[in-house]
Image 1 (cartoon, one colour):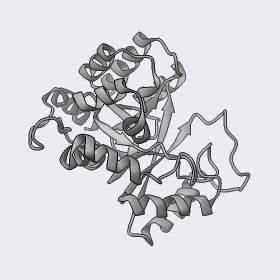
Image 2 (spheres, one colour):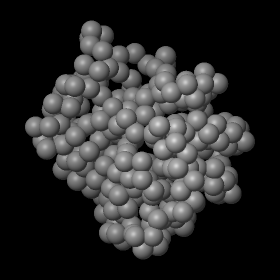
Image 3 (cartoon, helix red, strand yellow):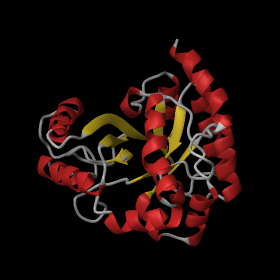
Length: 256
């Protein structure tokens, strides 16, 4: 599996507190089937304090990458961008950390943010040539119709795995109806919000079936990293989402 939302990079935000905890998270992730993880630190990071060690984000990433390689895993660089007027301009100016150097940017909103503000943000990000992956959509007070509008604009919807497995009926309806494009962990620690997800994975495979679960946790995440069209998982795997074609053509033009 591939995890597009993880705070496994230590001493940066409210995620892993030490290199040892990052190691433990890697072991947990490998145990449940993850082989590729994108380290999505919070950005901007004004509300958090690191561990005080004098290492840059890039240096810490290289250390965690090395630890992952010894386990046959891969860790990529990314960020979880809190949308504001400033960060929107940074994305439009090409300054945001995307996921694994792809054209996909993981974004989040202040809880309780105005629905139309979310739609406008997604529209601007798409027009800038990026693919907005909206983190943990279950946290927002969006109606199902708004989620549909976000997707029509080119937004990709991510749900946290624990919420999907154990959450509200409405969240499961979003999942089983095909609204959700990607499942990710949003893992933060080796305890609590961790990669210890054996029960959740079993519950989701039972709910969705092995094939659908694989699309949401492996195939679609890999396609986002590769800039390829997603699979609409309620159909056959070879049937792709045609609505993303226009967006991906725009992304390719922007890269030229």
